[in-house]
Image 1 (cartoon, protein in one colour):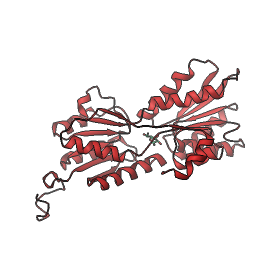
Image 2: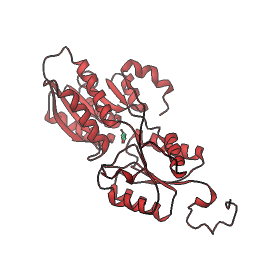
Image 3: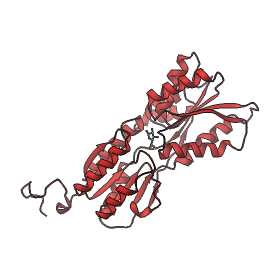
Image 4: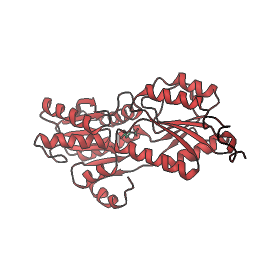
Length: 310
Ligand code: GYE
C-alpha cells in the first residue's frame, strides 16, 4: 500500500493505488428540502464508508453536470455518480466515461438513454407510482362527489424524470373518471418561490380551484402562502396533495394545511456507497434498485413528525 508515500506522486487525487475509492458526484442543486437532505445523506454515507467524495453542485443546469462529469473523467476517479437534472441528452458524456472505463451510477433520477450499458445501476424512487398514489388518494377523497373537481398542477423541473413521471402516474389514475379536470398545469421548478409565484397566477385566472397537486412539498409550501394571500384556507377551500414528506411538508400536513403527502426518500447515501464499492470491485449489481416508501395522512404525519430525520 502506497498511501504513506510523499503526497505529490499520485497527482490530482485519484486514489486507485492506495485502495481508497474516490467518487465524483454531480448533484442537481439545492432547490428543495429534499435535495438538502439528499446531499447530507450522500456526504455522511461517503465518510462512513471511507469513500473520498468529490462533490459538485450543478445549480439545476445540465451543462454544469456535463462539465463536472468531464472533470471527474479527467481526474480519473474510480466511480462517477450523479442525479441527472433532466432525462435526455446524456449519451455523449456517458460514452466518454465508458470509454475511460469509469463506471457510472445514477441516483435519484433516470436518463432516457437507449443504451443501458452506459451506466451500471440506477438507484431511486418509482416516480410513476408516486403519482399514482397521489391520485388514488384523490379518487377516494372525492368518491361521493358528482360535480367536477377542478385540479391545478405544479410540475417539477421541466424535462426531469420526477416531473414527467409524477404527471403521468397521476393522469393514469384520474383519467378513468371524467369529473376530475386538470384546469391548469405549469412548472414551479421544484422551488418554494416559483411554487408561490405560479400559484398566484393560477388563483388569478381560475376562481374555482378545488385541488392543488404539487410535485414536491416545497412548491406546495410556496403555494400555501399564495392561497392564504388570496384569502383562502389551504387544506379546506383548496385541498393539497404533495410529494416528498420532508419535515416542513410534514408539519404543514400535521397542521391541516396539506391533506396528503406521498413519501419520496432522499436518504440514498448508504445504498449508493454500497453499490459503488461493489461496482468498483467488479461485482455484479442489479441495474435497478427501487427505494421503499410510504404515504402520510394528517393523522399519520402527527405521529411520524417527532422521529422524522429530515
Ligand atoms: O422530489 C424534489 C427535488 O428528484 C426526487 O427533486 C427528486 C425531486 C424531489 O427537488 O423535491
